[in-house]
Length: 240
Image 1 (cartoon, rainbow, N blue to C red):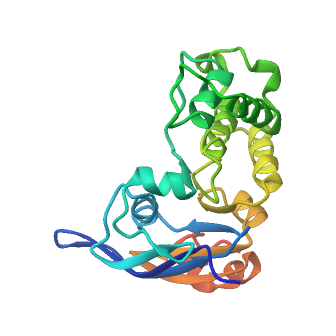
Image 2: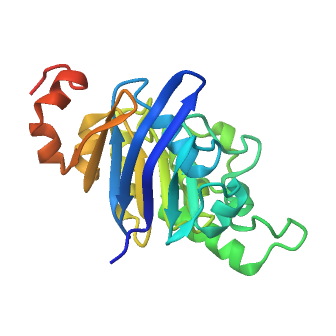
């Protein structure tokens, strides 16, 4: 089975600063892959290049065997790439249902909301466990509920590849468990996520890629990454 996403020899320079140096990785259909590494390792830059917010200095990105290296963000979204951000990407004064309608109705306007878009929004509300709060404004829900809503908004675009940028950031343990449960329940979508919470990384990822100073240090299963002394040295602080 061919990879859904293929990144080949990706370089990104900002002047004399070499942020990414020859990064290559692949994500298969339905796979959950984590990107970890210390601050400054290049994780956010890699995400921004995959989603089209940045252009690489060199290298290529293939999605479903199509070259998307220079493709604009909107086209990548239409082809099935979605992303959540560290900062909230919902509309605070709209209700939860209206936020999801904005995603499921994207590209078709609001004047004639389709029945399919409404049903998809309802289904996603149930999927993320927020159906009871459908008529609440997003500004009134908790931080944990907002994180679930943000994932729901991304799902509303019907992605094949979903990028999650630190989905556990700032969450209490109960909320981390809710978000983890949602991530584990997702089917027919590949997941690439950046996360600093190692418990979540080791519990969710099929495969983990470790970046260090813009280079791929290692890649493997949770057990393989845990056993790598270089990871303990540069990222886990020597902790076993």
